Structures are given as C-alpha cells and as structure tokens.
Image (cartoon, helix red, strand yellow):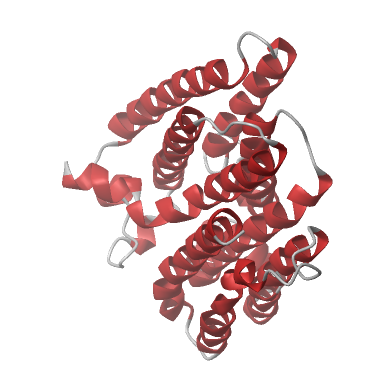
Amino acid sequence: MIDWIQAARLRTLPLSLSGIIMGSFIAKWRLWGEGGTWDWKIFALALLVTLLYQVLSNFANDYGDGVKGTDAKRIDTAEARAVASGKISALQMRNAVITVAILSFIATIALLYVAFIPEYMNQFYIFIGLGVACILSAIGYTVGKKPYGYMGLGDLFVFVFFGLVSVAGSYFLFTKTFSWDILLPGTAIGMMSMAVLNLNNMRDIVNDKNSGKNTLALKIGFKNAMIYEMVLLQFPLILILIFLGLNGFIQTQNYYVFIVMILMIPFAKLRRKIMAVKEPKELDPFLKQVGILTFMMAVLTAFGLNFFN
C-alpha cells in the first residue's frame, strides 16, 4: 500500500486543488453579490474529480517514464518511481491507470449531473467533452508513441488544464456564465503550475537529456529555464491584484480583501533561494514549496473575497 501512496505523489495534490478553490470561491463571492446560491455538493465533487485527475496523471507519468526507461537513472534519488524501481510492475501500473481513468470519468459524470441536469443540457455535453480531454491530457503527458511531455509541450498543457480550465471551469459550474476577468486568476494558477513543472524539468535536465525527453527546460537550457522560472513566480500575485482592482476593491477601500498580498514576502524569499541553486538536484525541495504557495494564494484570495468583503 505504501508503494501506491508514494506513486500517487501526495505532495502534488495541493497544487491540483488550488484551481478548484480559486474558481469555486470567486463564484461564491459573485453569486452572493447577485443573490444567487452556491452548492457545496458541486464543490465537493469538483475536489474529488481534480484529485482523481491528479492521481491519474501521476500514475500515468510513473508508467510512461518507467516503460520508456526515462526513470532508470533516477532510482537512487528522492524521486525514485515505482515502476522504474520495480516496486510496482508495469502491468499493475497500467491497470491502475485504466482503473483511475474510469473512476475519473464516473466522478466527472456525477459532478456534471449535479451542476447541469436538467436545465443546462448543452453545457452538460460540452463539459463531458472537456472532462474526456482532461483525462486524455493526464495520460498523454508520458504515455503513447508521441507523448507531449517528450516534445516540450507539457508547460502549455499544464497552463491550460491546471490553470484556465480548472479555475474558469469550476467558476462556470456554479454561475453557468463566463466572465473574462476569471482568466486573470486562472492565468495566475496556470503560471504557478508551470513553475512547478519547470522546476521538475530543471531538476531532471541531465537525466532527460540522456533519455531523450525533450522538455522545454532542456530545449532552452538550464540558465534560460531559471529566468523563465523567475518570470512564472513574479506575475501570479500581480494578476490577482489586477483582478481585485478591476472588481472595484481599491475604490471602495476594502483593503482587507488584499490579504493575499502578504504572500509577496515568501514569494520573494523563494525566488532568491531558487536563483541561488547551482546544481539541478538541489531544486527538489522547492517543488513542494511552490505547490504550497499556490494553494495558499488560492485560499487567501477565497478568504478575502468571502469573509472580508
């Protein structure tokens, strides 16, 4: 059992929850202002769905990198994977990927049924397609003949699905509407998700080069990937600030809503520590830290909007 828990990589789960928290509680704040209702069942099911998507992605990555030999030189490190180390067989992991994919689809159907049936049938079918795309994206990062993670496209997919789709999609589940300003927090979460992936790829840059996994970090080089990382960690709070400003909180002088800005200090410290790294393997501890900061950014934004406003 402990091998499966390790393969699920629990430290990635706060990152996956961040987009749902951000979009759901922005929706709650907006619905409260308009006299609408917020359904906690949608929120609970959305959390379940995104957790299943994340576990599916982690299992699929373990399987894909394992059977391709990408993880072979990582066995003696902190990021040793289950398939590559022999703790879980490739067949067992493949079956686990199939099982979690089925569970993810069932949970997605349940979520969309609660959110859209019977009044919003068109939206129900559209989101079914989006759910299938999310499942295929989670699997396709390392699995298949042409996995997009091996072509340097992982950052783009992470930005779209962990950022825009997660935040704007969860917002839509509650409000049944789309607002352009939701793309600002969606982009913020997306950039943080890209920051985690880029750190991961910077850490593994030597191994990926040897195994033919052409990540974006490998393509642009370690030094440029570090600059890219600093950009990704610089803008999310700015985007949240713009979102709050566009919604009139500066004019109303309701400054408590800006509680999320206290994260400027840990963000600055984190950027300095990452920039001081010389060896790729030293980046591993920062993966969890960026994930936690993403989670805190979502929680504090939600808290500010719903309890101080």
